[in-house]
Every structure is written in structure tokens, then in C-alpha cells.
Length: 125
Image (tube, rainbow, N blue to C red; front, side, top):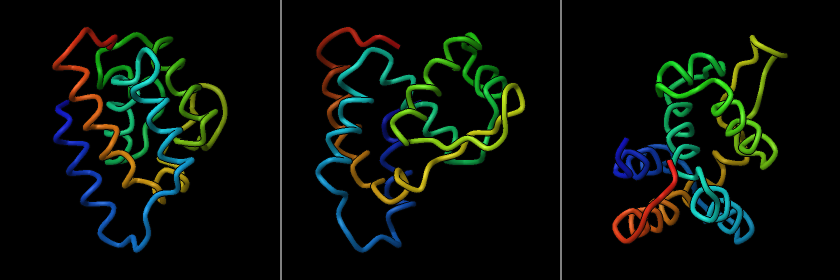
């Protein structure tokens, strides 16, 4: 996934928005996606979930990553109210949260910062 895809997602989803994301949302997104290890992987998960809901196993298959790693990233995203879960245990389906949808414009700043990081030093995928 290129960071360009995230910018396209932001443009697509923000067409109907009339307000800027709040400062706290921007700060949270910056921390979750660029201030911690694995932020790039979490951003890829958000990009994947923007198309349609997936369960953990489907995400792991799509991204060719370990199930437990995806489970960890989804837990981080859920605790920060960036994805929502419908169902329980193995069959739980994840989708973008209303909070993230409302503050989707802040992802553009995150993509810019990650792009700078990728060009300057090692990023943990």
C-alpha cells in the first residue's frame, strides 16, 4: 500500500464533511499511526477496512501477516475508537468507527508524516 492510497481515501471520504477534525483527534491519529511501532501496518488495516468490513482472519490473509499480529493491531485500533467491532470472538467483523469517519481529514497529516519517516529512517512494519 502506498501512502497515496490513504490520501485518496481521505479525499473520497471527506467530500461530504464540512468541518475540520478536532485537535484531540489529530493528536490521537498522529500517535497511533506515526508515534508508535506498527503504525504503518495499522494504517494499512484502516485502508483495507475503508473498502468493506473484514474479520481478523480475512485481514491477516489479505495482508499476508500473522493472525496474532493483526489481532494486536485491531485491539489497539479498537481501544482508541478508530475501528468498531460487530460480533464476538472469531466471527467478529471490524469496520471504521464513526469517530474516525468524522475526523478522516486528520489522516492526511498522518500520511505526510509517515512519508517523511519512511524516507528518512527505518519504520517498523
